[in-house]
Length: 366
Ligand SMILES: C[S@@+](CC[C@H](N)C(=O)[O-])C[C@H]1O[C@@H](n2cnc3c(N)ncnc32)[C@H](O)[C@@H]1O
Image (cartoon, rainbow, N blue to C red):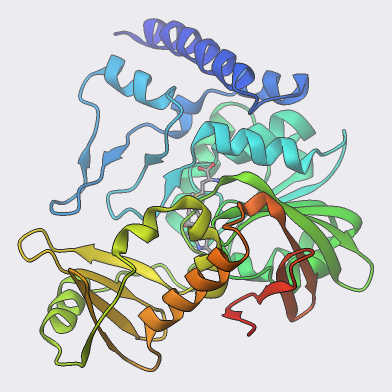
């Protein structure tokens, strides 16, 4: 395929994707429809990788037409071989941008530049001088800058920890995050003007928070799941192999449990679990032994083997999972859109109104 053929095929596939985003209700406004129709995703995703639990990520499309089909599918695309960045599912990007609902001329800060595609959509909607985007990884920001410039956009891009926002350009009318904090960072509340809005993945849901004076905010969760990579402190890698080996061979008391590892895949319960135990991870399922390992950021772990569980580290992780499940089950297994979120500086709560159930972000309130 020569350059002209790629562009015309990209346009055809993009039109199909946009039609689908509109039909599915992800895009609801003409302004965002035009942005998705006119911003070329393929410029921002020159290559993407297939993930495998056992092998190194491999390039996922060997021919130009496979590549374009992938780019213009409604899929998350891993864009770096070390899996430290991805291009978000377009329908989820659309739902979040629609929820941000900026007015003409609004100034928006994005946390998590990644490929630069979302920054391009924002630049199309608001004008690039009204868009600021930051990422912790300098190499990603540099690549995003050239791709944005190649289609005529020059938003302000910064390298830094998004937990600090980007104070130099504040105040903003809105912040949109495409990596997930455990709770809304105080800096974000301080950098959005009262009346402005924060849209961020919290606890596997999209929180839409209207900012009030005094660094406060109130919001709700959209119905769909939002499984973003966590906001990380520094770009780096963990030695998963030795962690798995240590936990597999650790000697610890064993008890029976009625709750199997499949509860992790219950999307509604995931929300509750992420609110109650934000550091919890499904580390692995070992095919040869049938053992499943969960870990927490505090170093705790749980090892499930059939109906038995062993636990180690500072907290009894599986006990906490069972408690959260009992609490969620007791209030009728609500979906995430039944919950609200309040932020007031350090005190942040997810509530199921009318049931007296709430989680202070990061732990269960008994
Ligand atoms: C899902 S990707 C973002 C996708 C991006 N918006 C796009 O349009 O391609 C998440 C990004 O968050 C970035 N990130 C992770 N932790 C961060 C942090 N503490 N501060 C800023 N960016 C961070 C990652 O480097 C990664 O590029």
